[in-house]
Length: 376
Image 1: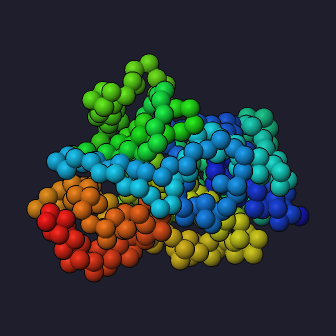
Image 2: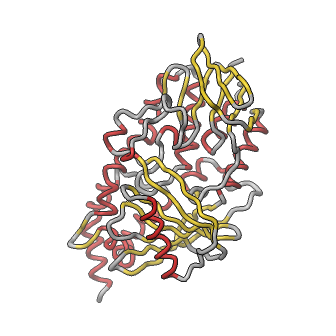
Image 3: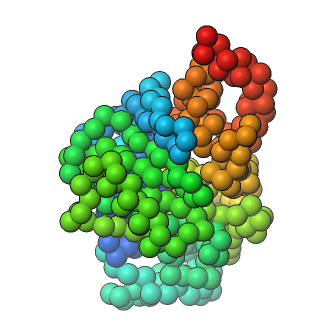
């Protein structure tokens, strides 16, 4: 029987463990925290729960949100009622759900820190705080702050974004997304069960500056953040050039989720890609096709994320029709049904970046006509 060590118990690692254990492999998940909380994460698009129905068909605490509010400097805000809701968990609850699935499938959970891994003969020796383990294969799911630097994506500073925020008391029925001037990123306010997750993610700006932007915004909006618990996290946001040389596999190992840099470079959303990469990794391992894993990722979604990385700076920092792109997004959403349909698909996760330009420019004449008619 093949023995697989999954290094990291977040969503990617837990899902890979469940897939492999269900297929009859001996699987051990090594993680020093197991389920933990994060300021970001926990929001599931329609694309995610449509492919993996167990994400909504369970008794865990979650919140379905059917409305979002988009705002940008110089354009005010606009409400977008969603055809397909975003399902929001606390990250702790979602992580626990996935770990329980892995354990129910037969995976063993080891709450310990992995210190090093070493290639021996045709397998691996894994040194942890509690001893030595051996495995035939390793799946690296150790997140963006992967301590095993020789394995997984090699993140440069230009390949990361910071995400930080607070959990604050309160409840609301909509998601707020606020674009800020001169920021490749955005502020979010997510309603969770029993509290709000408020935060900011951004690329190319120091974390203290991001934190000040967030706190200034929360103060202006009357959201009581002072005294609330603060969190910060590093997210992969690969530059376009980095996708060409992204290191996702090697002899006897595969990387999944954040450890493979598989995060949407525009939105920072990573849960769908964590689960899908875990599924593809399990398929590769079960079919003895580790060498084909990188190609499977590229053919499934990695090329689309690469295109997203090329578009990110234009979306957040660019200009379109003599105004900032974020302002135009808000204004077009307010006045054009055609553009609102595009935004619906972006929030659902069903609009690809590879097809975005064609859809935008093909529909631009009709969009502009709808905007002009809205003033009549």
